Image (cartoon, rainbow, N blue to C red):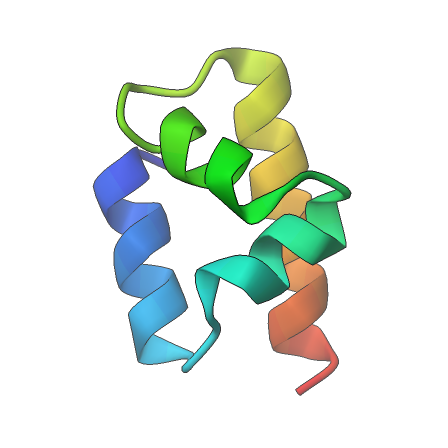
Length: 58
């Protein structure tokens, strides 16, 4: 999943960046920095897992 796909998934599911950052366990500004460039494998996995949990729990 690319950063653009992550952002689109956030928008389509009405999830705010701060909610995703909280689910990952990082600061909202850190998430913003992460999403400026393509994520490495470890970060991408953390983001995808947290995003899936947020969508499932809606």
